[in-house]
Amino acid sequence: MANKKLGKGLSALLGEDEKEFSELEHGEATKTVAVSRLHPGKYQPRHVFGEDELRDLSESIRAKGVLQPLLVRPHPKQVGEFEIIAGERRWRAAQLAQVHQVPVIVRDFDDRETLEVALIENLQRQDLSPLEEADGYQRLMKEFSHTQEQLARTLGKSRSHVANMLRLLTLPSEVKALLDKGALSAGHARALVGCAHAARLAKEVVNKGLNVRQTETLVKHEETGSRKPAKGTGVKARAGGKDADTLALEHDLANRLGLKVDIDDHGGRGQVVIHYDTLEQLDGVLARLTHAPQDSDQD
Image 1 (cartoon, rainbow, N blue to C red):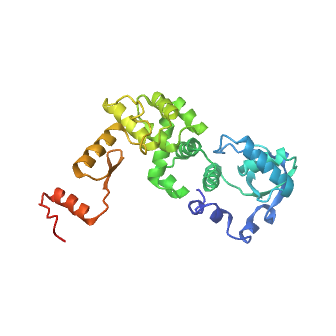
Image 2 (spheres, rainbow, N blue to C red; image 1 turned 180 degrees about the vertical axis):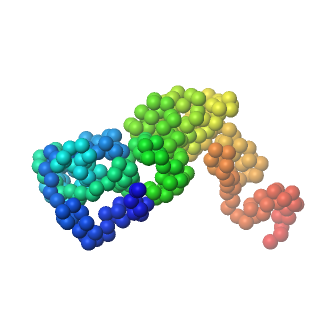
Image 3 (cartoon, one colour; image 1 turned 60 degrees about the vertical axis):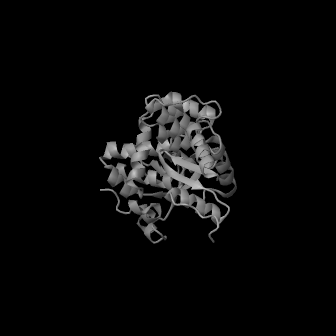
């Protein structure tokens, strides 16, 4: 059974103070282990370790050492060796810094606990890309029979967040590649989920620098067959990212009311803002909306 403290986060798992460390292997709070005895965990959710951040961390380690212990478990197949649960980046940076020993905390976790803790640790540090996070969720569900609701409760996330992240895994490989590179955000990618031409639209989004709202509009037009060519006044950014239809409607309303009008649309829902400078102008708008006659001489 998974550790009941997992849903409370990594600090609850490891204990708020050093008293709980007395339960660690051989009664030691930490122990120093040669980096050669440590091995990357098979449940590590991170797939990419940036060279620049590793280099910066290695400089810090060279100057101050590894300040935070790595969390490890006895290696399931190699006696006397350890598998890294959390802290692989520190381990890699220590090797770059030519540091030969690092502090570790040893815990006897099973496979499910190992993956859960690795996910929590990386999520709390915001170290995972959207696809890495989604892949970690899928592995927990596939390999350990978690439901989305159980997974959300265990990791301290909402069920809708888990569901939305898992949907990213259904995207075409071309879109996933743009997401991994940072050319698309998770918001852009979610707007493209389920679209028949997601790969083509993703390239258009990147080339035109569309924001998430514009991407949603682009997908909507593609699916309804009402798409219009973008020639600087279409779905491409203009006047705060508004498409040509929205701008035309703003113009018509402004002409009718004699006041500036802004329409803020979010996928078919939003708000209409009418700007006025005097109470008389506001009275005029209210009169038009209620079809009541306006007396310009009334105070």
